[in-house]
Length: 361
Image 1 (cartoon, rainbow, N blue to C red):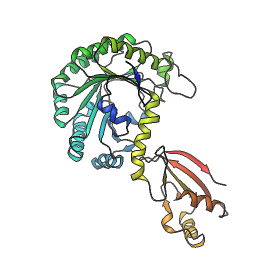
Image 2: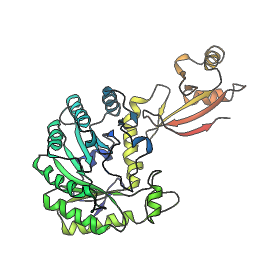
Image 3: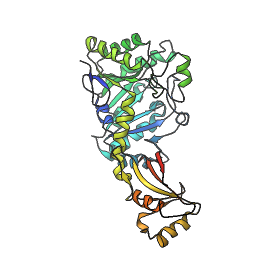
Image 4: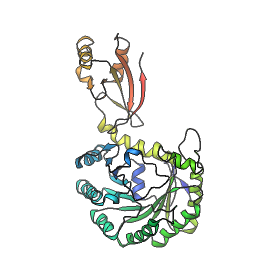
């Protein structure tokens, strides 16, 4: 039976362990490289991630301890290793898997996504020996005549020589139901556990490719592709009747409304400074003051306005003084001149993405 989960997704059978933890916000997203042996027309990666870079969630990794610090801030119970293709930088990826297992223990669950093109027997053994728990393959399914496709298929077969959970993860591309069925049967015959289907979405990098192929968004407010969700549901219905795999149709709404929100909520408690309020969505809410000379403004607020120094923080990087929301509201009605006050909300992430700014009169 196809059933709708509390996470706005759809499933047949049991969710893979990696997905169970991901929707609860328990998984660190470890991006080990943007390098990939393929160039899929639907790839959503941003331009700055299509390089040989490493990210832990939104944090650009400059040293190995950055990964550990980000996992600790999130109170992560596992990691999803992604790219690019993480196997394009195999030793780096293996090193991070070992590091996380050594630091957080064997129960720290790690799953990895790969095209399969570079999943040689030696590479698979290294990943397995490092402690990888779950591997997900995304072959060049929608370009079966590519030179890599046969290599990927043979490499996937070799993965069954090792003791870990094996599945597939592919986008739901309208018009490609037969190819998706073929892959489901291929995995099922090998004894795989699951096939994850992702609702296809527009991004700044795949927009032109998708439009040129006739794909359209479901609405002006959504990045999801028209027909992708419906096709995914058709595959799940077929798969329940014709295979023994578990299926998970991961929707665009799940990623934003559930997975990201839950991860932010896990991070907010540790990231929040004393003057910040954590919201139900996991954002940080506080007041700020903007002025040309921050030191002069700070002295004025402490000495003239009699604001306790412990309530104020000079953020020189962003050119502002931060404070509790109620202090900003009170000061906005009392302080004259060129000082401007705002209420802001930010993600508790490394990049502190600002999601709202309200000017105070």
